[in-house]
Image: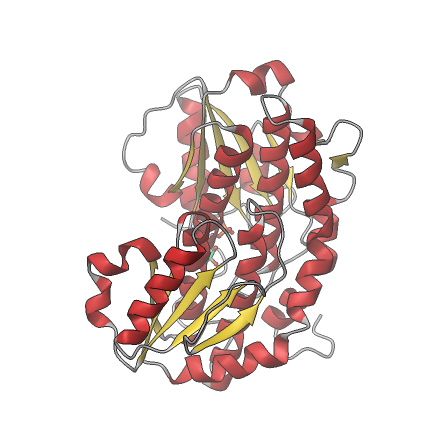
Length: 364
Ligand code: BG6
C-alpha cells in the first residue's frame, strides 16, 4: 500500500530505521558480546572449521556481498570474497568442503543465484542463505540462513533489503569472530555499534532536503564516477548501480586508488565524481584523489564524516554519522539511495519500474 508516499522506493527508503531494528531484534547477545543466529543450522564446531567464506549474489546483492566479505575478514579473520552468482554458475566452480557458501537474495527467486545453490549442493558444499522472502525457492533449498525481516520490497531498485543484508553480515561476522579470536572488548564495540544503526539511519534520512538539492546537480551531469577505497569500494559500486538503474545517467565505480591508473583521463566539468571519504586511516589519500579530480575541473560531491577536513577544496559534502570503521559502509550507502532517487525524480523517470529491468530475474 502506498499511503502518503509517491513511490514504493521512497516508502522503502523511509522504512529503513524500523526494518533495520527488525533484522537486529533478538539477535544480539550482550552477555557473550556476540550475535545469536539460530537459523544457521551449524554447530560452533562446524562454524569454526570453515577456512574460507564465499558470498554469492547478483546485482546489488553481489555488491553488498562485497561489504559482507570485508566484514567477515575484518571481524573473523577468515579469508572471504564475493562473486557474481551469474558468473559463478557458468565457470564450473571448485566447491571446497571447508568453504562456507553464503547466497544473498532479496527475492529468493533470482535464477542465477538459485542455480549457484544447486551447483554447490550437487558438489557437496555447505550453503546458507541471506534472504528476505520467507519460503522462497532459495530459502527452501539452502541448509540454513538468516532472514532479513525487511518486509515486502516492491520497487525494482533495492534499498531496505540491501541495508538489512549488510546488517545481517555484520552479525554473521561478529558471530564468526567471537567463535575465533575477536576479543570480548571488540565484540562489545561492534555489538554496541550495531544497536545504534537504526537511529543513525534515521539521522541520515533527516538530511533528505539537502541530499535532494545535491541530487539536482547530479541530475544535470552527463556522467558520474563513484569512488571509494577498500571498505568503501562496494559502497561506490552500489551507488553507481543505483544511479544507472533509475536515473539512466551513465555512472561507473572505481576504487579511488585506481583513478590515477586510467579513469582520470575522463575527468572534465560535466563528469561529476561522488567520493566516499570517511574519517579513517585512508582519509589523507582520499583527499589527495579529490584534489586531483578538482585540478582537472571535475565537480565533486563527498559522502563523508563531519570531522574530515577538506581544507580549501570546493566539495559539496553530505555528512553521515560515524559508526565503527567496520560498519561505516552500511551508513555511507544510505545517501546514495536518496541521491539516485532524487536525481531520477528530477528527471521525471518511472522510479519504481525502470526501463528494461525486472524486480527479480527468474529466467536465465
Ligand atoms: C536484479 C535487480 O535483477 O537482481 C536488482 O534489478 C537486484 O535490484 C538483483 O539486486 C538481485 O535480486 P535478488 O532478489 O536476488 O536480491
